[in-house]
Image (cartoon, rainbow, N blue to C red; front, top):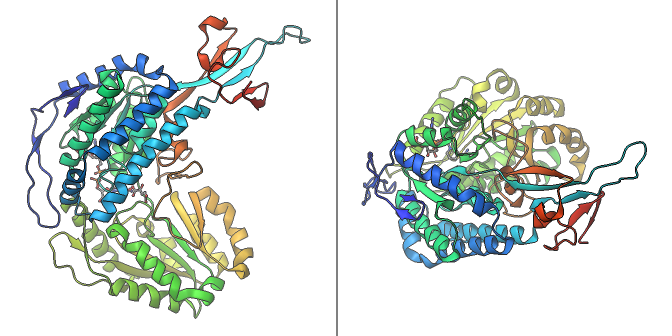
Amino acid sequence: MLIGGHAVRGSAAMIHAVDPATGERLEPGFPGATPTDVGQACALAWAAFPAYRETGLEQRAAFLETIADEIVALGDALIERAMRESGLPRPRLEGERGRTCGQLRLFADVVRAGHFLDARIDPAMPDRQPLPRVDLRLRNIAIGPVAVFGASNFPLAFSVAGGDTASALAAGCPVVVKAHNAHPGTSAMIASAVRAAVARSGMPEGVFSMLYGAGNEIGTGLVADAHIKAVGFTGSRSGGLALMKVAAERREPIPVYAEMSSINPVILLPGALAARGEAIGQGFAAALQLGAGQFCTNPGLVLAIEGPDVAAFVKGATEGIEGASPQTMLTPGIHAAYEQGVASFAGHDGVSTVARGAEATGRYQASARLFATDGDRFLRDHALQAEIFGSASLLVRVKDAAALANVLEALEGQLTVSVHMEDSDRETVAQLLPTMEIKAGRLLVNGFGTGVEVSHAMVHGGPYPATSDGRTTSVGTLAIRRFLRPVCYQDMPQPLLPDALRDGNPLHLWRMTDGALSRD
Ligand SMILES: NC(=O)C1=CN([C@@H]2O[C@H](COP(=O)(O)OP(=O)(O)OC[C@H]3O[C@@H](n4cnc5c(N)ncnc54)[C@H](OP(=O)(O)O)[C@@H]3O)[C@@H](O)[C@H]2O)C=CC1
Ligand SMILES: O=C(O)CCC(=O)C(=O)O
């Protein structure tokens, strides 16, 4: 583990990764943290907070870039270990390393630009009638130390130095990570890279810690610790809800940004089905099986208006599913949950199995499934909205556009909604669009939600249960907002103001002065 600048051997139960391709228990084991370790890491984070949140923009940006450099310097050993711990193939993990470093560097640019400070100045108007106006200046400050839960399905990009950590550090928040038990060795390597970057950049040691813990005690203790001021989480709905409860019951409740479950509806409209139904089916099958379906953006629900061309979609999807090999899932637990989910759909009255991938041969391998039902049945049974984490999807045939709108209306919150359309479908899309906006954080045309771009306009969020707070995103530069809070300075003398708000604009920021943006 890493507690501040110190590599520490835990003294609680040992955690071993399992190679899901072979079932082999991987050495070394990583002993878990005790509640005392949690307290120490959080206290160090709190001690680092005053200095870290006021680091210069250039210094903080360089720190984020140094973390990326140190991760690259880990070399191939990182990829080898992550492959063994996750069962994910090399190209996927090399891509994920690129994304992890890319998002650290993107947040460095965000820090340098300084827009996240949202500096605003309403100058005093002493002669205003009937009352004078005071001088008001606003900037965002960091919220405080953040607890980050590494996700199992992205051992690099959503884990120890993933998007939550990058955005929290960019905001000026120290981070304490609860490593995911599925990839403790990968986590140790990344933590060592962050530790080296902390030392090289001269940051306070408590700016970053990482703890192991099996069972719920360490995660719960971390969220309950009074020094922690926000939480970033990607995982199951039950895990996210449990942590939200802990956070809400604290003496000082704190925000939990949990990304939990989404089935990402894909709407197939008649014009698109007539023009290219089979190709859409093929594209769908590829998206469904990407990464063994272990993406929260996986297309778990397909809504199609009944008609002769739905068969073309089914043909393309079936070929794509039946022609694919089974894939190894991330952990024995995730594999078991998938098998249980598909068994429950397969045995469900009124649900048929349309396509099934080749039989699995490996212990933790899974084969894809496409199930089908009708709109009335789907509306009657809420259980059919449950996420099956993996390559399983449910095709819901509805009789017309009105029935389609009813099904959409009945859905829970989502990360994405995709619509496949031609010009002839435009009227239907216009009618569905307001509901799509209410239901999801990202609306796609003629695409699938997998493969999230890390950029300025990305929203990887959505109403509950997609996330615990649909006002924000966990991917893209807007993610920094989760860890900021505005402070207004009224009639504060110039020497006491932060540089971001001083007259003369010493940081050369874009600032809003009396409602107008300028760098004056
Ligand atoms: N929508 C999505 O993006 C994802 C969904 N999932 C879903 O989650 C299932 C399990 O996968 P997994 O990744 O392990 O996700 P979990 O939600 O089970 O675990 C994620 C992290 O949260 C911790 N945690 C979970 N529950 C609690 C709790 N009650 N109190 C304190 N800490 C808790 C875990 O620690 P510990 O293990 O030590 O308890 C782990 O570190 C999958 O089968 C899938 O259904 C998974 C990944 C992504
Ligand atoms: O597809 C992506 O890039 C992100 C998906 C994600 O956030 C997840 O699966 O947890």
